[in-house]
Image 1 (cartoon, helix red, strand yellow):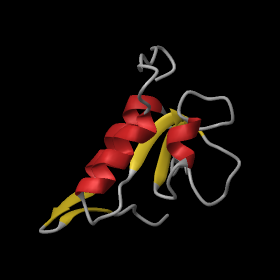
Image 2 (cartoon, helix red, strand yellow; image 1 turned 60 degrees about the horizontal axis):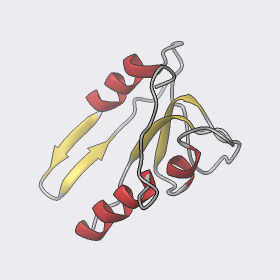
Image 3 (cartoon, helix red, strand yellow; image 1 turned 135 degrees about the vertical axis):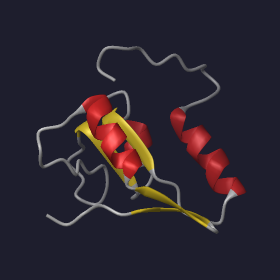
Image 4 (tube, helix red, strand yellow; image 1 turned 180 degrees about the vertical axis):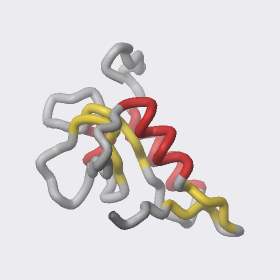
Amino acid sequence: SGHSVDVIGDDSSKVSVVSAVQAESSNAVLVVGDQGQLGGNDFELLSSTPLSLSVDRCSLDPGRCWNLDVRGERGAVLLARYLRHIEPRASGFKFTWPKR
């Protein structure tokens, strides 16, 4: 979030975590961050996969890093809302966002 600091070793990254999860699963991986704009602390993460959501700032790439908010929600409130729309399935999970 905008009020905390990410501490990541030089030999790792948020993208390496996503890569490790992808290596263990045949399903796509959804990533969520808050600072997807160029120079943001989640830019690399949210631009690493087309299945990425932002709870605040987005990148300019229209193919990823979407903020699905239409209510003015941000941060932890929007993250909780995203998480409520994840449904368990036999082979993983499904994210379904309601149409407007």
